[in-house]
Length: 349
Image (cartoon, rainbow, N blue to C red; front, top):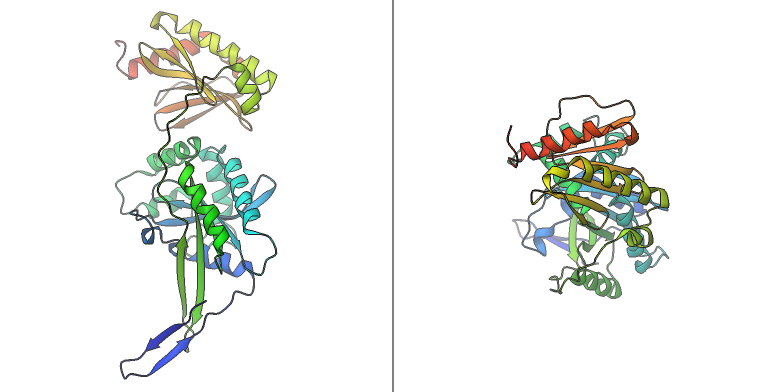
């Protein structure tokens, strides 16, 4: 690792050798305290700021070391490894991909719940500690022309589209790891980087950090292959259970029935099904591995209460229903569909 040479105004100079990290926990703490160490502007045209929202989050078979949110609404997962750790860089990259696959199925409510726990913990940097998630985001977005609710909607949309940022933070970057990361960046929808951090200490006790980011590559344009989804593919490729497929099919037929006068057209997508009414996608169903089946409507501000056991959640322009969906009668489904079309201006008042 190169040293830093400092020259005083009087011409005297001194060398600051790099200071090795004794433990990975120390590197983790530095990144959590100083997320600006991830300096994307040094390798891309983007200027993204970050705020720390988690540490040691359970994710699949392991735990994500650090979780950040970028000012672009993209969840950023950081895994730290020191050069003397026997675990290979390839294994670390595989770990990150597993974490990303797990967290991509989360909703903004799960992200917020984990972040709230972190903000009340000793692992949270002092300037964030004891804030609510909404207050943290409000401070983070202080100079941005965007509301907290809008930003949270953007976070969830990025998760649903698989947009994430992965960072392997190390004290020394290897050539093989650079090649792997550069290749992944060229051909994937997510971004992955190697972050090398060097620490130096001046004679007055001040610490100097020198971050270097590696792995950026322009995305290779590929011709998208259109996948025709069906119920068998939902079972085989997405792991939907027989009950989930059966229930999804049943509720889709109910939605088609109650919206029949608006010419519903069924469209099957990756993990969700929509009904186009009067030419617009206005309602449908989706399945999450942990949340199960949800009904959705493109609808804001529904004023009525729902039957006991039905769990509504409002996300920007969409209303989602989960829980005891059998308790939702057809007349309520029809009124929800009608309100969606009315709000979109497709039918009159």
